Image 1 (cartoon, rainbow, N blue to C red):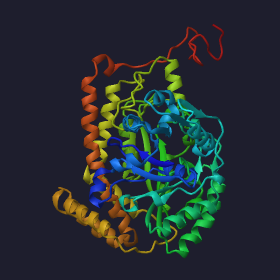
Image 2 (tube, rainbow, N blue to C red; image 1 turned 120 degrees about the horizontal axis):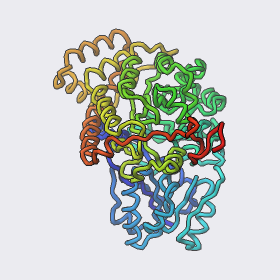
Image 3 (cartoon, one colour; image 1 turned 60 degrees about the vertical axis):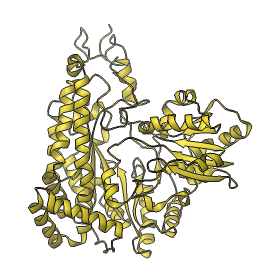
Image 4 (cartoon, one colour; image 1 turned 90 degrees about the vertical axis):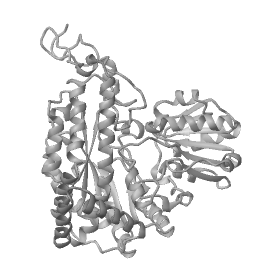
Length: 540
């Protein structure tokens, strides 16, 4: 069987980094890890090709020599997924679709023409899938509640990639998350029980990348890298000497929960192992909103202290935050601005709250008759408005969102945060200097020209650059990298500004100001459950 694995294109999002791609000469941020893992599960006598439509097109020769088209993608890729399905069926190909979007809308994908939709993890369903393909048992959804045994998951087929086209490589250590935030669908898809690969498996995958000639950035795509802290520490124990004997070929980044800051040994070992960037889910500084959203791991914690501890340990903090929670008070956007400025966080990844399919938030809002739209155009795309009736005016929330990006991603403000972020680090070890590649020098040159010549902040840029060279020369490369990344934010804030303002103009005055007030019963209590005829105390 000749198989074409397809990662469909997607529109500009927070994670596109198109401007940075142009500066570096790269074509995509990170490869489609799910498809690479799927390729490893296919029979050894099958021929596999990968097309990443983020920067590639399917050629006529690839269409001609393919028997089977296998597609995976997220909600933000929904248009691309449908387009590939239709083109493949027009050419008489067998089509299999999986991934996060198919998990939530498998019937819609069948209706679009897919022969088989896989809802869940490939490792669990591969046997049934191969049997269905062989028997041509089409028009069906393959699914079960079973979770994959990560210790049996094969190394991804990194050899299928055009490595030089990517900024990052991706690998996975864990699946699942022990927490249950109302707005997140991770536990629905992957469960709350943490499952991990063994340290040997992770080192094997890194060895493959190393032998293929990959260096620099590797992203651990785990939703929560420290969801099982003792297993994470077991991995780090093996990873540290592996990295040291190979002269630290990689820099790692990942995602983690705020309890990372409470374990100094964990942070020290992560840094020694090569981790330098961590995405932390802060969400909001409003505790009542955190409680209502089920983000209990962030309650009764000093989030300022969390950010400062993690950055001092040597990590660049990327703080994930959200606007639009129920019960959120006016000025939430300014409070997030203050949080970023106080803690010198260069990258604050802020989105408007959206109720995605399958989330507990979506279920609750449906029961309260508050959903406005489930249009995939906005879901998972950071330029889309809130898709439900909020508890304060929609226009007010949207304007705070736009103001946040306009304020934080003004060059002078970003420059100051970035400088102080790296100046205040005190990591346990000093990273050795690495000779830059030509593509890195190209990006540095463009950044210096823009910051040092074109921008009105040029004098402050040169002052901070010289101060950085004097105060933290061993982290100068990281400071410079953050200024290269800033070019993406300067562009993306304009995209947010224009897109949100355009959407607001299209809303009626009623929708702009519509607000939801939770019903209060005659007894004065708030209702519980889905019925307004129940409260915790009185029988009504």
